[in-house]
Image 1 (cartoon, rainbow, N blue to C red):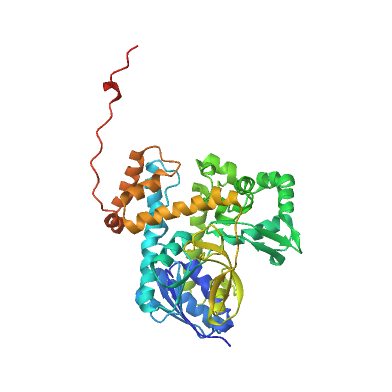
Image 2 (cartoon, helix red, strand yellow; image 1 turned 120 degrees about the horizontal axis):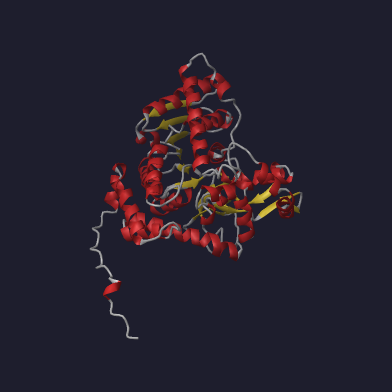
Length: 465
């Protein structure tokens, strides 16, 4: 027997994620009797998820309770766990900003607006939790996990953990070199979306030589023949190039859109490094993702409207690979387990401040979450990748917390696509002028300084010959 808990889900209109959560909860017998409160501002999507969840549990004969609300406070009050999967504005807002920032010379857009919007939401949820459910755990499941969790850990006193499934990239490596993923010993510490394989062993044998052998003997043929519906980031040319440069294999998103700029200058370049789709984040790969998302939602909508359809046929009762429910079970019912998580460093990785949220393996049980000690990572990796990434995070959080427009513009100036101060100022102006960014415009409302007088080169007296 286990303990029933209350779980509040913020952004529950994310139907694919929420119904995956429902599947995992229904299959977790130790959480029987729990209450799940779905919350979203989109009433239609919220009703879709709630209706399907109730039918799903009934078909399986599971004693879970579900309720839906448009009010965040109701979802948080008396919660034991809060899952935040919300994305402000959704993909429509993100795509509109992408098109606008491309007009200013930023191919595939800037993430800056999305991050800033998410910081406001994450911090407001965390502060509401301090007031309404101070003993609850926040399980942050939407991006940016690294920056957002660091911000919340510094600004509030809640218990929090960030989760990301990118670490499963190690399994793709196992498949390529022919070893069973479930029997491999692996570790991949770092910061979210920048994690690296520091240990990779099978039956006591180091598997890095098998990776090198695959690169030398099979990679070229794999790249020439790969025609999957999604880009295989983990085995891409970009991942292998990154591995050769920093000395450790990047896992998951570390070799995707968060890696070296020279993989991403245009579509032709993306195709060189990620294959015919140009990677998950190219205009081709991303459109495939959005199309698949729309198809999945439409499929769920049809099932929800057809009361004669069995939900368990559309969503077979098989556990997903997401770890939200196993982690909740480990804490709620004191079932010790090792999980890949994002929590404040507190000495786990030497050379990184204690209050920076890092990713790595942790022991999770009824006493909480304790990162396993990593020690010092290779200096080359620290200097080339992790420390610069942390500094970028610090500057963006400084801009957000202070509302300093100069710092905000400086974040844009560091982007390799920026060619002038005027370009950076213009794209920031465009971002803050968007109708849905009134809150950001108010945050960065410092009056602009008068421009310096123009420098006229032809007015300078030429030196005598």
